[in-house]
Image (cartoon, rainbow, N blue to C red; front, side):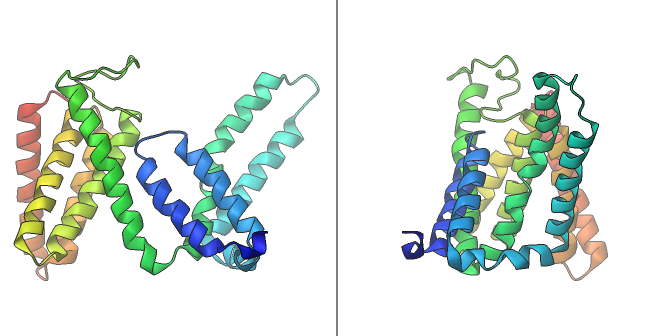
Amino acid sequence: MFKKIDGELMLNFIYILYAFTLPLSRASAPIATVLMVLVFIFSPAQRRKIGEIWSLPAARWIIIFVSYYFLSLLITATPGHSGEQWREGLRYLLPYLYLLPAAIIAITLKKRYLQMVLWALLAGMLVSELFSYLIFFGVMEKSRAIVFAANPTPFMHHIQYSTFLALTALLLLDGMIREEHRRYQLLYLLFVATVVGTLFVINGRTGQVAFLICLFALGLTQFHSKLKALAVSALLALLVIAGAYSLSEN
């Protein structure tokens, strides 16, 4: 059965679906992780690439760290350890397990699907932003206590959401610079404006700082004159900060 499955196609389809759902559902991460691992293991053509994972330094250190962490739990365990203590230890390990599929993505994501993955992520962020503004303007309410009009983060903690917004803004700015058609540049600019607006409306200092750093980095890569890049980036950063903090208390 599994020999007839196109593992490469399935994996890349999972990446596209995962990119879209990631900003919209916390459950998408563990579900996508399980699907990636299962397809990778049971697809003979993809399974042959296991050796390539170990050749990636980042993947190798992640595997070593996770193995060391798990062995440490086993070595330090005593008969007196309760089930709750075991669960607590494994809970700290869980975020690192999500890094393992990154190695699978690194060796199986095809270049022709990369743009689709990025567009799927941007589409998911657009939907997430729509909900964020509905909460901000009081049209919709969320049951979570930390989600309210002054902190409209519909699906994530504000720190995570602000980081995703910073990444989205960077992708959009890069796309706007590369785009040659004026009408599409205006669409990019409109999307950037809504993303930056959301970024400074929510309580997300992490994403705000990341966005400003990325703004300078993008300027340095796009201008031949480093002095001009710094001047333009600094001016944009000041305008963004002044505008954002005049409209938001966050």
